[in-house]
Amino acid sequence: MTVAVRRSSLRMWLLAMAGIPFLVIGLDVVTNRRITDALRAKLFRPEDTQIFEPRDEIWAWAMVAFGAFLVIWGLKELFVPTNVIEARPEALVLKLSGPLGTPSSVPWQRVIDIDVKTVEDDGRKLALLAVEVDDASLLPANPWGARWIGDREIGILTEDWADNPQTVAETLADYAVENAIIPVGAASEEE
View (cartoon, rainbow, N blue to C red):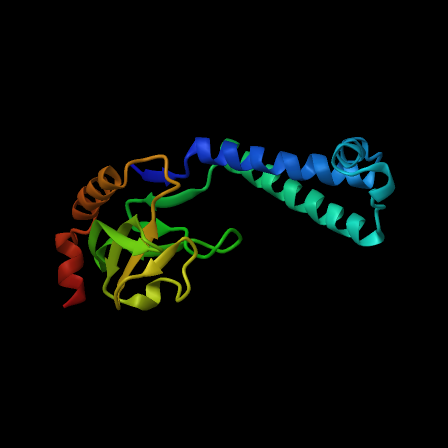
């Protein structure tokens, strides 16, 4: 049995939709300028109209690139979601190294505690899934989508999850207890 936590489908859909205005306006500026010319005619008097300069096309291409990135990444996460957290029988796998980095794998015997905590950030409270390990070097020094909240404890931001953080913490804690038990034969081999 594996437990996996993914990002919210609604948030990923909204992210993909947020890129569409950038694409439309950027493509309009670099092609036939129907929308921007109509807006310019409504906003400015004919004698005060402004012309497009080469820098406007550079900004338009930047908007096209950014809009395409948002749409592609949002749709990718919608149809093929990345596991932010995955509980496997051998280890707890955390996606903390950014979009192109490899996930961090922490053996269950090295996990000390899993709990939900809150932290205040710019006046608002954020829920964190706190994972405490016995050795901080198992996790990245600069985590992506998380923050260090202690010497050996990392808080993973939960605001874009599809699942309730408290339910995830309870499930992972139960899973950790079941899988962190060292078999009798393995204990005698270590001595």
